[in-house]
Length: 272
Image (tube, rainbow, N blue to C red; front, side, top):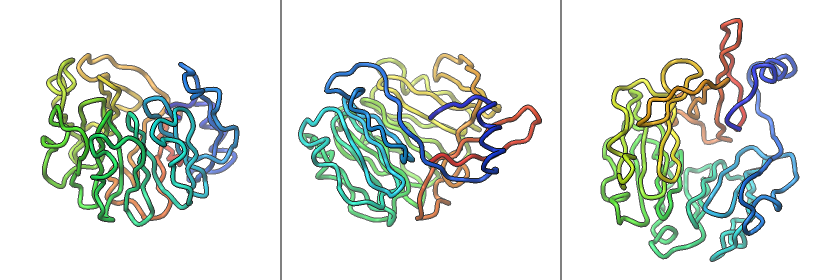
């Protein structure tokens, strides 16, 4: 859920207050190959969602994972069956899940060691899947990458420990620093790296297959990287644990959305 109307936000606040966690149902649309749309689960106890190449993942309120769509190399059948997970991410043909202790579980295609090279430490607070690679954010703010390295997705991973958010594209990655600046690396055929905006103050990032997006510092304004096109949005996403994911609890990790209401009162709404 990337957006809500102001009316819905205000109704939710009136009913539940300003700080809460709730579960929701899922709606899917688009290409229905491998029944990735028509097989969408109909339960209403989900707290997070993630899309892969031709499959989808959803995290339930008890921390269990549901997957559907393509079962290439066990994308669906090898999905972990236990519960208690706190985060999920989808790669091109592999899946990732984050445990409460900060360890990572992966499954699916392993041709480029997307699964077998998964780091074994337990100090991670965020995960992201790329086309054939993955990356994870550690508690100290450093980044670890693994998998396909044909465009430097792994070897060019930035060093340092001042990162607060990560995202993976098809053959590139990007990361948000604590000062709000953005770093990109990997394939640059369409300016995914060279057109990364300069400056700082950005508050969130996201990657498509061959493009990226970031929220600008101004409330409710979205910037399409490289094009400078503002898009108005009713909500502004906050990184987990405020803006710094390193401050997250090991308990249930949820995303937050910050709404600027007509009264200029900002309210934090937890939607996992």
